Each structure stands twice: as C-alpha cells, then as structure tokens.
Image (cartoon, rainbow, N blue to C red):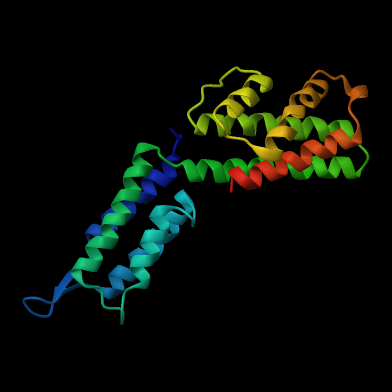
Length: 219
C-alpha cells in the first residue's frame, strides 16, 4: 500500500465537501440539474486532483473525463452529475485506502530519471565509474519496486535474487531478460569499488537498460 501524502488526502476531502454542497436545481418534476457555475468550479479542481493522484492513463481519470466530455450545452442533468460524483467517490476511496500505484510509479520514475540523467552526464565527462554507480543504484531500487508492485517479497534480497524472482514470474522476457542477466555482475563491481573491472561500455549498457526499464514500467 502506498503512503499517501496527507495534503492529497485533505485535498480530496475538501473536494468531496465541495461536491456535496453543489445545488441541484429543478425546472419541473422531471428536470433536475446541477448548478453549472458551482459544478464547473468543482469539476475542474476534481479532475486536476484525480490526474495528480492517478495519472491521465488511469481508469479514474479516463472515466471522469469521458463523462464530462459527454455533457451537452453545459446542462448537467442529475443522472450525469451522480455518475461523475460516483467516479470521484471511487477515486477518493482509493486515495483514502492508499491505493495510488500510478502515483508511486510516476514519482519513482521521476526520481530515477534524475539518477539516469546524472549518470549520463558523468559518462559524457569521462567518469564512467561514477556513471556505473549511479545507474546501478537506480536499477537495483527500480527492480525491487517493480517486483514489490507485482506481489513479490524482495526486501533485503540481493539484485541476483530479485532478477531471478522477476524471471520466474515472467515479469521480464525477451531481450530485456537476456540483458538483465548481466546487470548484477556490473552492479557488484560498482558497489564493491571494484572499478578496474568496469568499462565505459558497461556503464553505458546499464544506463541504456535502466532508462528503457523506467520508460516501460514507471511511466
């Protein structure tokens, strides 16, 4: 379960209170709609919060956006309002329950992306050992997080064990699987200061691999 930032939880609580305060207006017995000014003031903030929490590719965001896009002439019928409210409530429930897998992956990807950028810069400057250390640290942590996100218990395990666990569950395959086999060896050289055994090509291969791994699994 992801540790949800308190600020995000409070934001969803505030938006939920704002949603509940939106007036439902009646033009007759069968014509009930949400006050458009209040609704759009809320829905724009709610969409932003859902995107920040789950990402644009999440089911919550896609469903929320689809319902809003289907509104015609800015007239929010009660049924449409309740459908949109239901999607928001589902998103809020996941925030309250700590189920922010997309957020965690997105943040993780950004952090490790910084490591990769630093590793590339070091390699360009001729510091291939520094590049290897940075890239290997990013890859090892990324592999563990990816394994944990897929239900594997890898706390305290070596990189070799994590790689084997991913392979046994079929979470890596093809060329990625073959390349990953060589990574623990380079990692051990880098982390144990056995730097004479690391070449610029080794550092470049780890950087290339971790970059592709992050793009595939943490975007």
